[in-house]
Image (tube, rainbow, N blue to C red; front, side, top):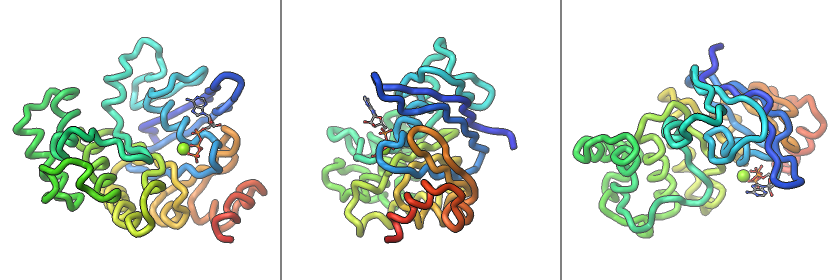
Length: 244
Ligand SMILES: Nc1ncnc2c1ncn2[C@@H]1O[C@H](COP(=O)(O)OP(=O)(O)OP(=O)(O)O)[C@@H](O)[C@H]1O
Ligand SMILES: [Mg+2]
């Protein structure tokens, strides 16, 4: 396996709190990996460190052939190679959905407005929001906002998509439409690292599941193994909470 994204020995502390304690992982092109673990286990921090939203204290991060953990790299340029969607809707409220989706293509990637808009409209169509392009985000449901955020995240053809609990702020009836979109991206060959509490979805869509416990990867493997026959007592304990 040639890794598209490779992290080795990541350490991250906030003050006295050691949040990542030597995390190493690899993500192959077109692989879908779910990161599960209790609240506070470091899932978001891991994702934020990988796309340089948080500086690491120690470790190595390779994206393709580039050492992106080198302090001399231009973090903005590197971040533009990732697409990221977070739990709470992070669309710009003062911009239309269309402008939200075209913004980074136009500003970061210097794509002409006409081309960016043509592509954005095609993407909005793909996520089922063609008729919302001119609306502002506050006119959309939570599920529609997350689908717009996903359209924005993939608008620049990112090499890796980082999804951080993108359904956990949604009303239950809106979760399905967002997960269905992620499933489609996965089928279409996107490379995805997602932190999630949606165990059924992870089991269904992920190629591999990583269980993070206290800032360490305690166990990982195909979903059938991690969910069906977890080796570690702490994994079993964690999963039992979801089936109770
Ligand atoms: N910017 C920060 N400053 C200080 N502490 C932080 C910061 N970000 C995260 N932490 C702490 O790091 C630990 C891990 O947080 P993180 O958000 O990565 O966990 P998580 O696994 O994503 O949890 P959840 O499932 O609740 O989203 C927590 O104890 C949190 O309080
Ligand atoms: Mg989190």
